[in-house]
Image (spheres, rainbow, N blue to C red):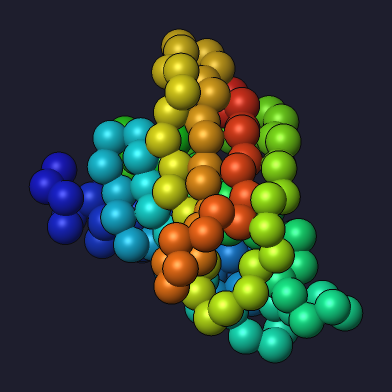
Length: 139
């Protein structure tokens, strides 16, 4: 599939992830072979009591971007084969600002398990907000 067709297909398939796309407003910006970029415009609904993005919002963004990247090779038949086995999130800075971007790429691709890394940044200042490592399992 061409890049634009892959992005459109990913948006169609992952539109069914209502929590990520509707409740939080995550958008798929880019998809390629086992890589993805997703973004989120922050607003009051994403804030915790301190006024910064809640950790669960960051985790949801990373989890969604990882699912898109891992399943990028099976979008043509809408058969999503890769699911999260475990994840570790490292919070580096408070998520202050209006936008977050998550870039996901594989550290190791395997036949039944793969390891991905997602870097969440504030695109306004380039500051790293969190790094997430996720083991994906083929089911």
